[in-house]
Length: 545
Image (tube, rainbow, N blue to C red; front, side, top):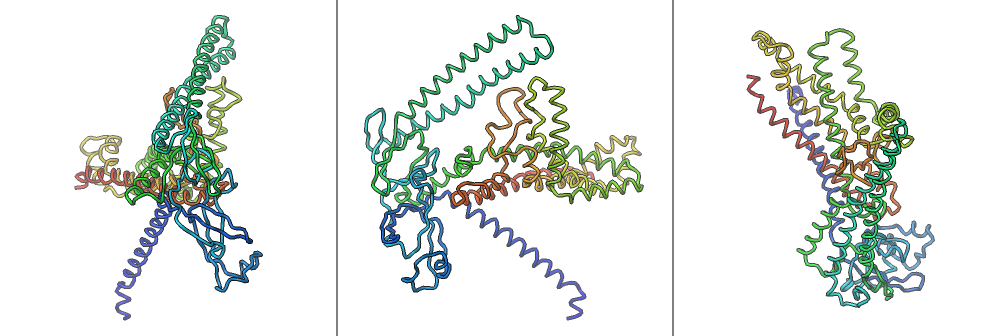
């Protein structure tokens, strides 16, 4: 036994076991997050409950959202009469009833003993709405232009409402935005000329004519918007709720409608795929508790790519200087120690640094020099995606420097000496021989930087991320990429939905779904970088021979 321990075999098995347990734990966590998140989009059955509370019977329609076993002692301390209960625990159910504007809440909690009857609600419909969440009821008719139509008219009404809604969004996001952009440019031009003392009567008259022209265009667009909105409001959906009351829902509010209890498995799967697609491609609604996360996906990926473009040249140049040019003295050793220690600085400290240095100092200076016409409203002197990317670039810079320097140190000196002996300069040797051979190590540093930066939230809260961004950092107006704009981020979206949501129970599945999406985005970015690294490794392998 002692000889076996001295051979080192037990430690190999211990190490292998630890790695296996870690892999199982990580995969198990991912599977749990994925299941909790993706199952949210599956159409759950809707039940009809007959509930007796304090001798009063009421009918409730909704989904069984969650269940939990509650000890009788806890119920007794909460003031619940448990004299008729014999079991030591009682099941408590959380039922999603929707119809928020009528009941004030999406959920109710009931005890198992209070449920007198539970059955599948026949022909119940779930209506996904623009506001106030989902509505559960029995569709009765479609009112279009004052004419009552039966439910066979529903697909046509939904298609027409969707088409009009899409045209409204196009007008608002393209034509209205374009008119506002030109009016703002004219306002800034007028102010800039006034600041320089060059606002002549001719220039003022020209700007006023252009403003009048765009105001006329804006008024025409506004009239079209009103006409489309009136067309959208001309139709409505009549439903009967659980209490037998007739409810009118304008078609302008109806995004989709389905009958979950009537769907086959294939239809449920198709509906699930449609809901996942909407989640990935639409903007959020209802304080981030409804809708999709596309702006957050775009902001996360765009910020990480921008950070990568910034940190890679800086980190590689610093590593080249430290390894190839700087002497091996105490000052160089001090710099290396400082770089390594920077990797351990809390991320929130980088956020404070980014806010003070990048936003207020650098951004404020840029505003004073180039955007004086827009002051006191700041352009770059306020948090934005550029400062977020720079802050994360500074935070991940030590990782790239250390990884690149390690890659440079693994290249034999004989290769450098051979290149110099053949007449190449040191710069040519670095560019044509050393850097290609070190490129896999550079990509490794970038992979580590992306993995850390993509999930950071604390510094971003100070330098650019917001709960809701009205526009993306990219549009059709010059300069097309607007690095001064604020943006949404998946990590901050998770924090906001989990801890700042006004509807915690409704938002909980979205936390899992967004978390799984964030992990998927990070893994996708890393796999892309790993693929590039492996390609470079194979491409320049011949240089190592």
